[in-house]
Image (cartoon, rainbow, N blue to C red; front, side, top):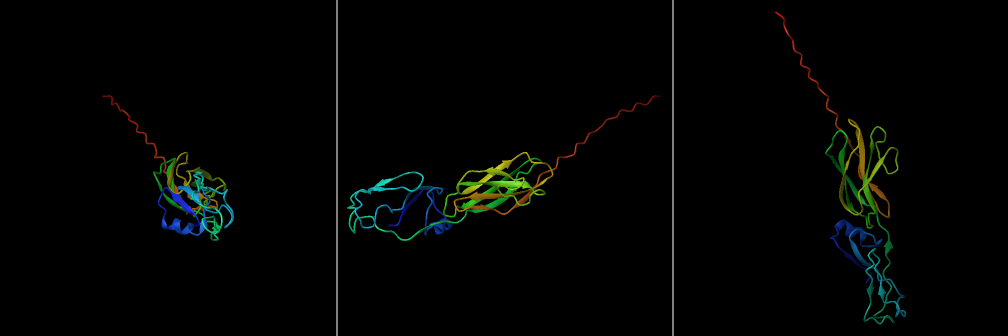
Length: 206
């Protein structure tokens, strides 16, 4: 047995394919327990190696019972060669909503973590005229953190300037790197003009 992975959610076909031939990092979203079964020495005397280590962040260690732990049977055995790797997350920038003169709701969807847990996700935005391609740490770029893991997220941004075009992207980061969604633009609303009505009374003398 190479390893056992216990999740508290159903994995998508994309997630299963990305992870099937690699070791996990242990911090993946929804991972309850992860047993690599790689303690001990192949076919040696492993009588002292009775703990099955949980390599997730939950430390749900197990205890081996009714194993001889020595010789070529009922013992720790060498596993198959497996790489510890992964790919960057899959992230989509979704459409802006609720645009006002000074705000808008920006959103994204982290649909896959690439085989490594998403440790940060969020939105970056900037005034298009200043920076039309916002990136983390870029000039005049604001960053909004929106948690970890996969899923849909959004933020109601305030404090924007009226009648101004902004560029924004969703992003997600795992141990492999940071991925950005496509850049999207929107323009805040204009303040309606103020109309003042004057009433003039005319008196005619006869």
